[in-house]
Length: 116
Image (tube, rainbow, N blue to C red; front, side):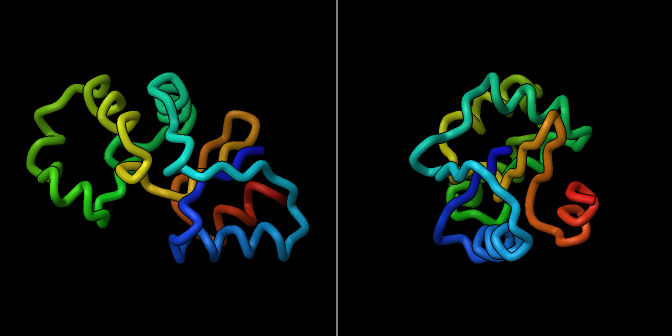
């Protein structure tokens, strides 16, 4: 299982604490140092069943400075995935990848259901 996060992110810290408190083993990956590739993002997007917009860190400074709120609707899925692959700070985090299941962000209930 892979846990992809940005160590300074408070939501990531909460998710990591939840995993640790529940004794769940994971492989930690710093999204800023090891950005997801286009191929990884394409697979996760397909596996997640979520709208592609959910993979964007819409509250991030980079998202805002690039004015992506207005630009994303005009981009194809492939263009959006390629854009996400350029910088980990554009990607919503944490990402939890387990056996083809993908959780974007941290909601305790989703984590609980995944580990029942």
